Amino acid sequence: MKKPKIFIACDTNKVNEVKKIITQTKVKKLDIGYKFGLEFFYTKNGRQFISHLKRKKIFLDLKINDIPATCAGAIRSLKDLRFDYITIHANAGVETIKSIVKEAKKTNRKIKILLVTVLTSISNSSIKKIGHTKSIKDLVKKQALLAKACGCHGIVCAGSDLKFVKKIFKGEIITPGIRLKGDSAGDQKRIMGPKEAFENGSTALVMGRSIIKGNIKKNIKRLVEELK
Image 1: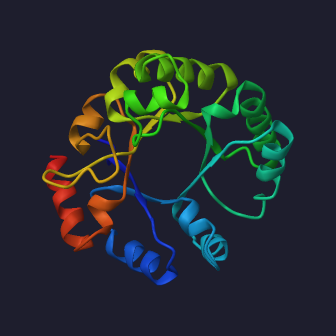
Image 2: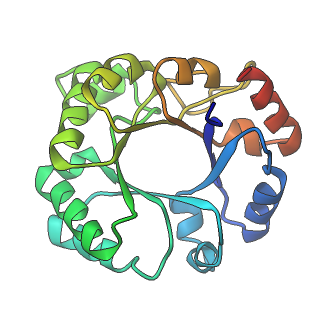
């Protein structure tokens, strides 16, 4: 049986905190990787720190979203950096998504492109304020089909979208907005527990606050217990 794949979100701007997270999340029962978002990637020495990580699964959550030429150039600018996954936002559109997938094949064929669908912090009421007339469900369905058509290796979607997404998209499905029992939702609107997410079709989870806030080792033990 495969170990559950968990990406720990290193949501901090302090290198020492990331070192602590990595040290305290080593556990044989889980397949652990590390997700670096804008907060750490933009911080002083953040990129340099990532470049020195060895033998770790690295997930760059940059949610690239711009015109095709700029986004292809962004992928080229990362060619010196070793990482396994990178995110692009569905809002960038078909031309940009295809340009990123094409450029990644030239730069490093091992890179897996993940398409980010509707963020877990967004509700149906907030998506209407953006200007969308479709429900989150209908919009995510469109985005999953877009990921498939453009050759993305995986998608990032909320737990609430898993059941219908897995029928559309057969690549990796990574789920953020995961909370351990009793933990606060925080700024997330669409959350789910880790066991339920895997049962509904997720191939990997992204976990931040439920792991890195408080006693990290204890939180990891809670996760292992919930996944039994």
